[in-house]
Amino acid sequence: MLAAVALTTELDAVAAAAAVHSEPGETLAAVLPTEPSPGVRVYLCAFARGVQRAWLALDGERRVVVERNLVREAVSIAVLCEIAVETVGGGDLERLRGELVGLRLRENPSGIEEAEEAALAVERAVGAPPRVASPAYLDELGAAARRLERALGEEEAGSPFVAAMRGATAVVDRLTAEVERTYKHALR
Image 1 (cartoon, helix red, strand yellow):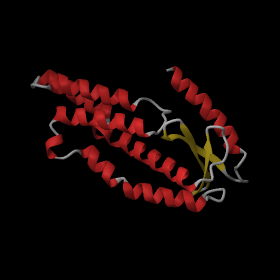
Image 2 (spheres, helix red, strand yellow):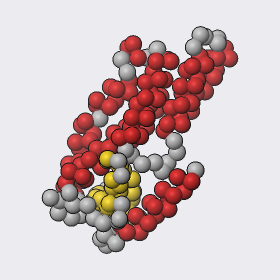
Image 3 (cartoon, one colour):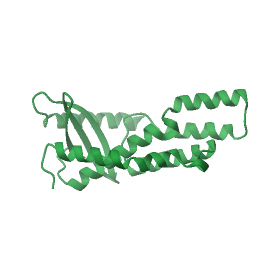
């Protein structure tokens, strides 16, 4: 809980710093906290003007990031974590947990407790927003997804989570291209 409060406070400060870079008619639409590598914080800031978007990344000191590779890494981990959150457990953990409880009450099949525990572990791993997109967070989601898929017997048919992560490349590429094309400063 304290970490979420601290992150919310941090995001408010980043939003204030990012707002300085908005142009007339633009609003700050989102601040996405990322940690592309341990100890390296990058905030992806999306600005909106109608349906148009522009992007800017700020570092942990709230300075504009101009290193193209660092911006790409931040975009990549942000997208991968978002897709992982949307995919893990079928994308609707509350519904899944309800179905597992119903199944336990109706039929009580072998292994249902393990599946319920795994679904709860996925819910804990996902956490509540705001959250920092990082390789460690993605690994945690992947491990929780794997445990749940095993408990549900989905792993033998091929992991839906792994399939979603493999399919994320196109989304990462599209958003990276958009960020680079609409970036508010020159990237090097």
